[in-house]
Amino acid sequence: MRRLDGPGAFLVRSDRSRAYQHTLKIALIDFSRDPAGYRYENLLGQIQEGIEAYPHLKWKVATVPLGLSHPFWVQDLDFDISHHVRRIACPAGGDKSAFCALVSELYAQQLPRDLPLWIVWIVEGLENGEVAMVAMFHHAYSDGVGVSIMLEGLANPQKRPNVTSEQLGVDSRREPGSLSLLLHGLVGLPLLFLREIPYLVRHQFRSRKLRRAYLESGQDMPPRASSAPDSPFNVALSHRRTFFYASVDLPELKAIGKHFGVTINDLLVAAVCGAVRRFYLARALPMERALVASVPFSMRKEANKRDFIGNYIANSWLSLPIHLAEPLARLKYVQQSARSMKAYVEATDGGGMSYRAMELIPPLLVDFASWLLRRRRGRLHPFGNLAISNVPGPKAHMYVGKARVANWLSSGHLPESIGLNITAWSYVDRLNVCLMADRVAVPDGQQFMAYLEASIREYLELADLPESPARDGP
Image 1: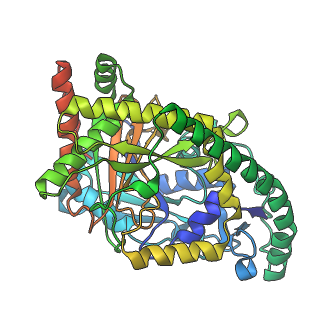
Image 2 (image 1 turned 180 degrees about the vertical axis):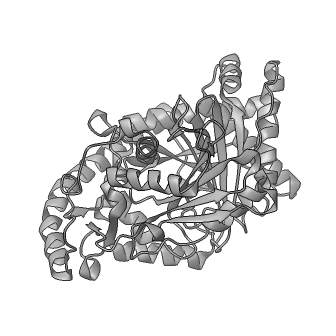
């Protein structure tokens, strides 16, 4: 048996019928260069080959009795690919709007807890004859980097690992019973406390000392999630989701960033800030202070940079100055806020406190926190106002057999009380920015993404650079 890590256990326990904890990965595949063309049976066979290379796709979650320890990954002895790969046609001509509306509906379904936590929808009937693989992987399996590594291997046999379930710590021949789960959980519990509590105590003293030093020197600190103001994005999650995306020319963004002396991340966050400001203005909402964005960052070290199982992430927070009217003032503010966040994260052991504290959070505390957040209906902000992430993707085109992956999209999940997630994922020469939102918080995802594209064009015009042709289509 293989025990879930702290973040993975937290995500499994937080998964509910309205708070789906699965991530979304979409490959838009162009079969025009494949001499055999598209055949569903051939694509299904390629997926089956990939599953054999990644044994963890046949694992499911087994909980420890009485919740005395984190759950374990165990083999699904009745694994059936028909439960996980499904086929559907895109309605209404298969244009971008119709495709995104379909993805919104597909995403808003909780993954069955008694099966391995993933589903791939094969979507046919898209514009230009493309076919989409819409994959939903539970975040408990891995972070965005890990899923990216796995998807690259699924598409490219040369990048697949040569491992078995047994080498990864899971017996593929049997499924443990309740007593075995309880004993394994109890045996590992004392070792867990002995390992984590001394680190957390040292980290707490170090963090307090660092905070005092920041205050005495007048240095800026990242905002606290608890300082986030009320916003329309802090809601009690509904059953419905809104998904949409925009593909932006990556070299163009790099040119804008170079002109203003900022990073791609700075520019992305400033553009999101501009989109949120437009969203507020369209609804005549007051903008008196900055919002607080949750920003995940990688905890991966050299030893685990190629791991495709496990969540090596922690969170920090960033200020979004929606109250500033001038785009360049917002960009400068975001740049300074990002520098402060990065410096503080580096000074506090890369966010190790939040990452390792999850190892000790008891299941009942997670249940109570989820209940409290639902009861307060978005009036508590433990994760800030919205989530923004940026994950580097493949720099070269990927292939599924002989068919080229024309584009690759990714979106994160929504934790309790946050109704908006913006995820950027690069692919070759594009930066694909995806919106995943609760339908109550953002009723029209297409309109919000139009606000984001308008914010990017605003910086392009201020930089006085030639505009690249617009990217569109599924």
